[in-house]
Amino acid sequence: MFLKPFETKQMLEAILGSIDEAIHVVNSEGMTIYYNEVAANNDGTKIADVLGKHVLDVFPSLNKQSSTLLKVLEHGKPIYQQTQTYKNRKGQLIDTVNTTLPIRAGKTIIGAVEIAKDITTVKNLSQALLALQEKVNTDLSKPLPFTGAKYDFNHIITTNTEMLRIKELARKAAKTSSPVLIYGETGTGKELLVQAIHNASSRKDSSFIAQNCASLPASLLESTLFGTKKGSYTGAVDRMGLFELSHKGTLFLDEINTMSLDFQTKLLRIIEDGVIRRVGGMESFLVDVRMVVAMNEHPLTCIEKKQLRSDLYYRLNVFFLEIPPLRKRKDDIVLLARHFVKKFNYSFHKLVVSIDEEVLQILNNHDWPGNVRELEHAIEYAMNVVDGDTIHEEHLPVYLQGKRGSMAKEIPPLSLRMTLEQTEKEMIIRALNECNQNVLHAASQLGIPRQTLQYKMKKHGL
Image (cartoon, rainbow, N blue to C red; front, side):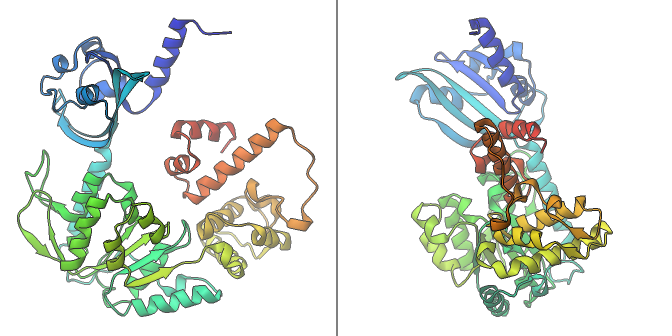
Protein backbone atom coordinates (compact mmCIF):
# COMPACT_ATOMS: atom_id res chain seq x y z
CA MET A 1 0.00 0.00 0.00
CA PHE A 2 1.49 3.34 -1.07
CA LEU A 3 1.22 6.49 1.01
CA LYS A 4 -0.63 9.48 -0.40
CA PRO A 5 1.45 12.65 -1.05
CA PHE A 6 0.06 14.51 1.99
CA GLU A 7 0.71 11.44 4.18
CA THR A 8 4.31 11.25 2.92
CA LYS A 9 4.76 14.96 3.70
CA GLN A 10 3.34 14.51 7.22
CA MET A 11 5.59 11.53 7.86
CA LEU A 12 8.68 13.39 6.58
CA GLU A 13 7.89 16.41 8.77
CA ALA A 14 7.36 14.12 11.80
CA ILE A 15 10.73 12.47 11.22
CA LEU A 16 12.56 15.79 10.77
CA GLY A 17 10.77 17.21 13.80
CA SER A 18 12.02 14.39 16.03
CA ILE A 19 15.70 15.06 15.22
CA ASP A 20 17.59 16.98 17.90
CA GLU A 21 19.46 19.18 15.38
CA ALA A 22 18.12 22.47 14.05
CA ILE A 23 17.00 22.17 10.40
CA HIS A 24 16.29 25.12 8.09
CA VAL A 25 15.35 24.54 4.43
CA VAL A 26 14.88 27.24 1.78
CA ASN A 27 13.86 27.08 -1.87
CA SER A 28 15.88 28.46 -4.78
CA GLU A 29 14.62 32.01 -4.02
CA GLY A 30 15.68 31.93 -0.36
CA MET A 31 12.14 31.44 0.98
CA THR A 32 11.85 29.15 4.02
CA ILE A 33 9.93 25.96 3.23
CA TYR A 34 10.83 24.00 6.37
CA TYR A 35 11.95 25.14 9.84
CA ASN A 36 11.79 22.81 12.84
CA GLU A 37 11.18 23.45 16.54
CA VAL A 38 14.85 23.05 17.49
CA ALA A 39 15.84 25.79 15.04
CA ALA A 40 13.11 28.04 16.41
CA ASN A 41 14.30 27.51 19.99
CA ASN A 42 17.91 28.29 19.00
CA ASP A 43 16.90 31.50 17.23
CA GLY A 44 14.44 32.54 19.95
CA THR A 45 11.56 32.78 17.51
CA LYS A 46 8.50 30.83 16.36
CA ILE A 47 8.14 28.53 13.35
CA ALA A 48 5.23 30.60 12.00
CA ASP A 49 7.38 33.76 12.04
CA VAL A 50 9.92 32.17 9.69
CA LEU A 51 8.01 29.74 7.48
CA GLY A 52 7.19 31.12 4.04
CA LYS A 53 9.40 34.18 4.43
CA HIS A 54 12.74 35.16 2.94
CA VAL A 55 15.81 34.55 5.09
CA LEU A 56 16.90 38.20 5.03
CA ASP A 57 13.40 39.41 6.00
CA VAL A 58 13.36 37.24 9.12
CA PHE A 59 17.03 37.68 10.07
CA PRO A 60 17.88 41.30 9.16
CA SER A 61 21.37 41.01 10.69
CA LEU A 62 22.31 38.68 7.82
CA ASN A 63 23.16 39.59 4.23
CA LYS A 64 23.97 37.65 1.06
CA GLN A 65 27.59 37.32 2.11
CA SER A 66 27.03 36.23 5.72
CA SER A 67 24.06 33.90 5.15
CA THR A 68 25.37 30.39 4.53
CA LEU A 69 22.04 29.34 3.01
CA LEU A 70 22.14 32.11 0.41
CA LYS A 71 25.83 31.54 -0.23
CA VAL A 72 25.21 27.85 -0.97
CA LEU A 73 22.30 28.76 -3.25
CA GLU A 74 24.55 31.11 -5.19
CA HIS A 75 27.68 28.98 -5.51
CA GLY A 76 26.25 25.46 -5.18
CA LYS A 77 29.13 24.36 -2.92
CA PRO A 78 28.43 22.74 0.46
CA ILE A 79 29.79 24.31 3.66
CA TYR A 80 30.79 21.79 6.31
CA GLN A 81 31.20 22.15 10.10
CA GLN A 82 31.23 25.96 10.28
CA THR A 83 31.11 27.26 13.85
CA GLN A 84 28.90 30.22 14.68
CA THR A 85 28.41 32.32 17.83
CA TYR A 86 25.45 34.71 17.91
CA LYS A 87 22.79 36.27 20.13
CA ASN A 88 19.28 35.13 19.34
CA ARG A 89 16.17 37.29 19.55
CA LYS A 90 15.91 36.63 23.31
CA GLY A 91 19.45 37.90 23.86
CA GLN A 92 20.82 34.43 24.64
CA LEU A 93 24.35 33.60 23.45
CA ILE A 94 24.19 30.53 21.19
CA ASP A 95 27.10 28.45 19.82
CA THR A 96 26.42 26.12 16.90
CA VAL A 97 28.26 24.00 14.35
CA ASN A 98 26.52 24.27 10.97
CA THR A 99 26.57 22.20 7.80
CA THR A 100 24.82 23.72 4.79
CA LEU A 101 24.14 21.68 1.65
CA PRO A 102 22.61 22.46 -1.76
CA ILE A 103 19.48 20.55 -2.80
CA ARG A 104 19.60 19.52 -6.44
CA ALA A 105 17.14 18.14 -8.97
CA GLY A 106 19.48 16.78 -11.58
CA LYS A 107 21.97 19.60 -12.18
CA THR A 108 19.60 22.37 -11.05
CA ILE A 109 19.83 23.80 -7.51
CA ILE A 110 16.27 23.95 -6.17
CA GLY A 111 17.09 24.87 -2.58
CA ALA A 112 19.42 24.52 0.37
CA VAL A 113 19.28 22.89 3.81
CA GLU A 114 21.19 23.92 6.92
CA ILE A 115 21.67 21.51 9.83
CA ALA A 116 22.90 23.15 13.03
CA LYS A 117 24.13 21.39 16.17
CA ASP A 118 23.82 23.45 19.36
CA ILE A 119 27.11 23.14 21.26
CA THR A 120 26.36 25.88 23.79
CA THR A 121 26.18 23.40 26.66
CA VAL A 122 29.40 21.66 25.56
CA LYS A 123 31.20 25.00 25.34
CA ASN A 124 29.90 26.15 28.71
CA LEU A 125 30.98 22.89 30.33
CA SER A 126 34.38 23.16 28.65
CA GLN A 127 34.82 26.70 29.95
CA ALA A 128 33.64 25.68 33.41
CA LEU A 129 36.22 22.89 33.43
CA LEU A 130 38.95 25.31 32.38
CA ALA A 131 37.87 27.75 35.09
CA LEU A 132 38.01 24.97 37.67
CA GLN A 133 41.43 23.81 36.47
CA GLU A 134 42.67 27.41 36.52
CA LYS A 135 41.45 27.81 40.11
CA VAL A 136 43.13 24.58 41.20
CA ASN A 137 46.35 25.49 39.41
CA THR A 138 46.63 29.14 40.50
CA ASP A 139 50.12 28.47 41.77
CA LEU A 140 51.57 26.28 39.02
CA SER A 141 54.82 25.63 40.88
CA LYS A 142 53.11 24.39 44.04
CA PRO A 143 53.00 20.56 44.43
CA LEU A 144 49.44 19.22 44.34
CA PRO A 145 48.08 16.22 46.26
CA PHE A 146 46.51 14.97 43.01
CA THR A 147 47.87 16.06 39.65
CA GLY A 148 45.37 14.31 37.38
CA ALA A 149 47.48 11.16 36.87
CA LYS A 150 46.65 8.29 39.21
CA TYR A 151 48.36 5.34 37.45
CA ASP A 152 51.99 4.27 37.59
CA PHE A 153 53.97 1.43 36.01
CA ASN A 154 52.74 -1.05 38.65
CA HIS A 155 49.24 -0.68 37.19
CA ILE A 156 50.40 -2.04 33.80
CA ILE A 157 49.74 -5.77 34.25
CA THR A 158 51.70 -7.95 31.83
CA THR A 159 54.04 -10.90 31.40
CA ASN A 160 54.24 -10.43 27.64
CA THR A 161 57.80 -9.95 26.36
CA GLU A 162 56.94 -7.11 23.96
CA MET A 163 54.82 -5.30 26.53
CA LEU A 164 57.61 -5.59 29.12
CA ARG A 165 59.97 -4.04 26.55
CA ILE A 166 57.53 -1.15 26.03
CA LYS A 167 57.36 -0.60 29.81
CA GLU A 168 61.15 -0.44 30.01
CA LEU A 169 61.32 2.07 27.12
CA ALA A 170 58.61 4.15 28.79
CA ARG A 171 60.62 4.22 32.04
CA LYS A 172 63.56 5.63 30.07
CA ALA A 173 61.29 8.19 28.40
CA ALA A 174 60.13 9.33 31.84
CA LYS A 175 63.67 10.48 32.67
CA THR A 176 63.67 13.19 29.96
CA SER A 177 61.37 15.95 28.71
CA SER A 178 61.43 14.88 25.05
CA PRO A 179 58.09 14.56 23.21
CA VAL A 180 56.57 11.06 23.20
CA LEU A 181 54.38 9.64 20.42
CA ILE A 182 52.28 6.61 21.33
CA TYR A 183 50.42 4.45 18.83
CA GLY A 184 47.95 1.78 19.84
CA GLU A 185 44.51 0.54 18.89
CA THR A 186 41.48 1.70 20.86
CA GLY A 187 41.46 0.16 24.33
CA THR A 188 45.13 -0.89 24.51
CA GLY A 189 45.87 1.42 27.44
CA LYS A 190 47.56 4.46 25.91
CA GLU A 191 46.56 6.90 28.65
CA LEU A 192 47.52 4.38 31.33
CA LEU A 193 51.04 4.33 29.88
CA VAL A 194 51.12 8.14 29.58
CA GLN A 195 50.11 8.61 33.22
CA ALA A 196 52.78 6.12 34.28
CA ILE A 197 55.40 8.11 32.36
CA HIS A 198 54.27 11.33 34.05
CA ASN A 199 54.29 9.83 37.56
CA ALA A 200 57.80 8.42 37.02
CA SER A 201 59.13 11.76 35.78
CA SER A 202 60.51 14.82 37.53
CA ARG A 203 57.20 16.55 36.70
CA LYS A 204 55.10 14.19 38.83
CA ASP A 205 54.24 16.91 41.36
CA SER A 206 52.93 19.23 38.63
CA SER A 207 49.81 19.05 36.51
CA PHE A 208 48.86 16.20 34.20
CA ILE A 209 46.15 17.25 31.76
CA ALA A 210 44.63 15.04 29.06
CA GLN A 211 42.55 16.21 26.10
CA ASN A 212 40.95 14.13 23.36
CA CYS A 213 41.26 16.27 20.25
CA ALA A 214 38.40 14.47 18.48
CA SER A 215 35.88 15.50 21.14
CA LEU A 216 35.89 19.23 20.33
CA PRO A 217 35.33 21.30 17.16
CA ALA A 218 38.40 23.16 15.86
CA SER A 219 37.23 26.52 17.22
CA LEU A 220 36.77 25.15 20.74
CA LEU A 221 40.02 23.19 20.53
CA GLU A 222 42.00 26.35 19.81
CA SER A 223 40.53 28.29 22.75
CA THR A 224 40.81 25.22 24.98
CA LEU A 225 44.51 24.73 24.25
CA PHE A 226 45.66 28.35 23.94
CA GLY A 227 43.21 30.21 26.18
CA THR A 228 41.20 33.33 25.40
CA LYS A 229 41.56 37.09 25.75
CA LYS A 230 38.60 39.10 27.00
CA GLY A 231 36.75 40.71 24.11
CA SER A 232 38.27 38.50 21.41
CA TYR A 233 34.72 37.36 20.58
CA THR A 234 31.28 37.77 22.09
CA GLY A 235 31.28 36.39 25.62
CA ALA A 236 35.04 35.74 25.73
CA VAL A 237 36.86 36.24 29.04
CA ASP A 238 40.50 36.12 30.12
CA ARG A 239 41.16 32.40 30.58
CA MET A 240 44.23 30.22 30.54
CA GLY A 241 44.37 27.36 28.05
CA LEU A 242 45.65 23.86 28.67
CA PHE A 243 49.21 24.77 27.69
CA GLU A 244 49.37 27.38 30.45
CA LEU A 245 47.64 25.08 32.93
CA SER A 246 50.18 22.36 32.11
CA HIS A 247 53.17 24.60 32.80
CA LYS A 248 55.92 22.53 34.47
CA GLY A 249 53.75 19.43 33.93
CA THR A 250 52.58 17.09 31.17
CA LEU A 251 49.99 17.71 28.45
CA PHE A 252 48.56 14.60 26.81
CA LEU A 253 46.79 15.10 23.47
CA ASP A 254 44.94 12.05 22.15
CA GLU A 255 43.89 11.52 18.51
CA ILE A 256 45.93 14.47 17.20
CA ASN A 257 45.31 13.23 13.65
CA THR A 258 41.75 14.58 13.97
CA MET A 259 43.13 18.15 14.10
CA SER A 260 43.04 20.13 10.87
CA LEU A 261 46.39 20.41 9.07
CA ASP A 262 46.34 24.20 9.61
CA PHE A 263 45.90 23.72 13.34
CA GLN A 264 48.73 21.16 13.38
CA THR A 265 51.00 23.95 12.05
CA LYS A 266 50.21 26.04 15.14
CA LEU A 267 50.89 23.06 17.39
CA LEU A 268 54.24 22.45 15.70
CA ARG A 269 55.29 26.06 16.29
CA ILE A 270 54.48 25.81 20.00
CA ILE A 271 56.42 22.56 20.36
CA GLU A 272 59.40 24.22 18.68
CA ASP A 273 59.58 27.46 20.68
CA GLY A 274 57.29 26.91 23.70
CA VAL A 275 55.54 30.25 23.12
CA ILE A 276 51.74 30.48 23.14
CA ARG A 277 49.35 33.35 22.53
CA ARG A 278 45.75 33.35 23.69
CA VAL A 279 42.98 33.59 21.10
CA GLY A 280 42.43 37.29 20.40
CA GLY A 281 45.41 38.37 22.51
CA MET A 282 48.69 40.09 21.70
CA GLU A 283 50.68 39.02 24.77
CA SER A 284 52.86 35.89 24.45
CA PHE A 285 53.58 33.34 27.19
CA LEU A 286 56.58 31.03 27.48
CA VAL A 287 55.49 27.62 28.75
CA ASP A 288 57.46 24.58 29.88
CA VAL A 289 55.29 21.59 28.97
CA ARG A 290 56.12 17.92 28.41
CA MET A 291 54.18 16.91 25.28
CA VAL A 292 52.83 13.39 24.93
CA VAL A 293 50.53 12.56 22.02
CA ALA A 294 48.70 9.41 21.02
CA MET A 295 46.96 7.98 17.98
CA ASN A 296 44.79 4.91 17.39
CA GLU A 297 45.85 4.76 13.75
CA HIS A 298 49.46 4.34 12.67
CA PRO A 299 51.09 7.75 12.07
CA LEU A 300 52.58 6.74 8.71
CA THR A 301 49.11 5.72 7.54
CA CYS A 302 47.76 9.09 8.72
CA ILE A 303 50.50 10.90 6.78
CA GLU A 304 49.54 8.98 3.62
CA LYS A 305 45.87 9.89 4.20
CA LYS A 306 46.78 13.58 4.66
CA GLN A 307 45.56 13.50 8.27
CA LEU A 308 48.95 14.24 9.83
CA ARG A 309 51.65 16.68 8.80
CA SER A 310 54.97 14.93 8.19
CA ASP A 311 56.95 17.74 9.86
CA LEU A 312 54.80 17.45 13.00
CA TYR A 313 55.30 13.69 12.99
CA TYR A 314 59.10 14.00 12.77
CA ARG A 315 59.10 16.56 15.59
CA LEU A 316 56.94 14.40 17.85
CA ASN A 317 58.59 11.12 16.94
CA VAL A 318 61.52 11.58 19.33
CA PHE A 319 60.31 8.71 21.49
CA PHE A 320 57.93 6.33 19.68
CA LEU A 321 56.06 3.65 21.65
CA GLU A 322 53.77 1.16 19.92
CA ILE A 323 51.44 -0.73 22.25
CA PRO A 324 50.60 -4.20 20.88
CA PRO A 325 46.92 -5.17 20.65
CA LEU A 326 45.63 -7.79 23.08
CA ARG A 327 45.32 -10.41 20.31
CA LYS A 328 49.14 -10.24 20.00
CA ARG A 329 49.70 -10.67 23.72
CA LYS A 330 47.49 -13.70 24.39
CA ASP A 331 49.68 -14.67 27.34
CA ASP A 332 48.27 -11.65 29.20
CA ILE A 333 44.56 -12.47 28.78
CA VAL A 334 44.15 -14.82 31.77
CA LEU A 335 46.42 -12.66 33.93
CA LEU A 336 44.37 -9.55 33.12
CA ALA A 337 41.05 -11.35 33.58
CA ARG A 338 42.03 -12.45 37.09
CA HIS A 339 43.30 -8.96 37.86
CA PHE A 340 39.93 -7.47 36.87
CA VAL A 341 38.10 -10.04 39.02
CA LYS A 342 40.11 -8.83 42.02
CA LYS A 343 39.40 -5.22 41.10
CA PHE A 344 35.63 -5.72 40.89
CA ASN A 345 35.56 -7.95 43.96
CA TYR A 346 36.72 -4.89 45.87
CA SER A 347 34.37 -2.36 44.26
CA PHE A 348 31.30 -4.67 44.10
CA HIS A 349 31.87 -6.22 47.57
CA LYS A 350 31.92 -9.75 46.16
CA LEU A 351 34.09 -12.81 46.73
CA VAL A 352 34.62 -14.46 43.35
CA VAL A 353 37.63 -16.73 43.68
CA SER A 354 37.90 -18.49 40.32
CA ILE A 355 37.13 -18.46 36.60
CA ASP A 356 35.87 -21.67 34.99
CA GLU A 357 38.33 -23.35 32.56
CA GLU A 358 35.77 -23.17 29.74
CA VAL A 359 35.53 -19.41 30.30
CA LEU A 360 39.31 -19.08 30.16
CA GLN A 361 39.29 -20.94 26.84
CA ILE A 362 36.61 -18.60 25.48
CA LEU A 363 38.65 -15.59 26.54
CA ASN A 364 41.77 -17.00 24.87
CA ASN A 365 39.91 -17.79 21.64
CA HIS A 366 38.42 -14.30 21.25
CA ASP A 367 40.30 -11.71 19.13
CA TRP A 368 39.44 -8.73 21.42
CA PRO A 369 39.03 -5.93 18.85
CA GLY A 370 38.32 -3.63 21.81
CA ASN A 371 41.54 -4.85 23.46
CA VAL A 372 42.08 -4.56 27.24
CA ARG A 373 39.11 -2.22 27.64
CA GLU A 374 36.79 -4.79 26.03
CA LEU A 375 38.17 -7.54 28.30
CA GLU A 376 37.66 -5.37 31.37
CA HIS A 377 34.06 -4.64 30.38
CA ALA A 378 33.42 -8.35 29.76
CA ILE A 379 34.69 -9.22 33.25
CA GLU A 380 32.76 -6.32 34.76
CA TYR A 381 29.58 -7.65 33.14
CA ALA A 382 30.28 -11.14 34.51
CA MET A 383 30.92 -9.75 37.99
CA ASN A 384 27.57 -7.97 37.87
CA VAL A 385 25.57 -11.13 37.12
CA VAL A 386 27.50 -13.86 38.97
CA ASP A 387 25.99 -14.99 42.30
CA GLY A 388 28.45 -17.68 43.37
CA ASP A 389 32.21 -17.71 43.72
CA THR A 390 33.04 -18.83 40.14
CA ILE A 391 32.50 -17.16 36.76
CA HIS A 392 30.89 -19.58 34.27
CA GLU A 393 30.08 -19.23 30.58
CA GLU A 394 26.51 -18.06 31.23
CA HIS A 395 27.91 -15.06 33.12
CA LEU A 396 29.75 -13.73 30.06
CA PRO A 397 28.24 -11.19 27.64
CA VAL A 398 26.02 -12.91 25.06
CA TYR A 399 28.39 -12.28 22.16
CA LEU A 400 31.16 -14.25 23.93
CA GLN A 401 29.09 -17.28 24.86
CA GLY A 402 29.66 -20.42 22.78
CA LYS A 403 33.17 -19.45 21.59
CA ARG A 404 35.07 -22.46 22.93
CA GLY A 405 36.58 -23.54 19.62
CA SER A 406 36.59 -27.34 19.37
CA MET A 407 34.52 -27.55 22.57
CA ALA A 408 31.74 -25.39 21.19
CA LYS A 409 28.22 -26.77 21.31
CA GLU A 410 26.54 -27.75 18.08
CA ILE A 411 24.36 -24.82 17.11
CA PRO A 412 21.05 -25.61 15.40
CA PRO A 413 20.58 -24.01 11.98
CA LEU A 414 18.98 -20.58 12.07
CA SER A 415 16.79 -18.80 9.56
CA LEU A 416 18.34 -15.98 7.55
CA ARG A 417 16.37 -13.41 9.52
CA MET A 418 17.48 -14.81 12.89
CA THR A 419 21.09 -15.06 11.72
CA LEU A 420 21.07 -11.43 10.56
CA GLU A 421 19.51 -10.24 13.83
CA GLN A 422 22.00 -12.21 15.91
CA THR A 423 24.92 -10.88 13.86
CA GLU A 424 23.59 -7.32 14.12
CA LYS A 425 23.26 -7.62 17.90
CA GLU A 426 26.81 -8.97 18.28
CA MET A 427 28.23 -6.16 16.09
CA ILE A 428 26.42 -3.52 18.16
CA ILE A 429 27.66 -5.02 21.44
CA ARG A 430 31.21 -5.16 20.11
CA ALA A 431 31.10 -1.57 18.84
CA LEU A 432 29.74 -0.31 22.17
CA ASN A 433 32.49 -2.15 24.05
CA GLU A 434 35.19 -0.79 21.74
CA CYS A 435 33.83 2.75 22.14
CA ASN A 436 33.51 2.57 25.93
CA GLN A 437 29.67 2.57 25.67
CA ASN A 438 29.68 5.90 23.79
CA VAL A 439 26.61 5.62 21.52
CA LEU A 440 27.68 8.44 19.17
CA HIS A 441 31.15 6.96 18.56
CA ALA A 442 29.71 3.44 18.19
CA ALA A 443 27.20 4.68 15.60
CA SER A 444 30.03 6.34 13.67
CA GLN A 445 32.06 3.11 13.76
CA LEU A 446 29.07 1.10 12.50
CA GLY A 447 28.35 3.69 9.79
CA ILE A 448 24.76 4.39 10.88
CA PRO A 449 23.01 7.47 12.40
CA ARG A 450 22.91 7.68 16.19
CA GLN A 451 19.08 7.54 16.19
CA THR A 452 19.19 4.28 14.20
CA LEU A 453 21.63 2.73 16.66
CA GLN A 454 19.46 3.77 19.62
CA TYR A 455 16.45 2.16 17.93
CA LYS A 456 18.35 -1.09 17.30
CA MET A 457 19.69 -1.13 20.89
CA LYS A 458 16.12 -0.85 22.18
CA LYS A 459 15.00 -3.59 19.76
CA HIS A 460 17.68 -5.96 21.03
CA GLY A 461 17.17 -5.02 24.69
CA LEU A 462 20.67 -3.52 25.06
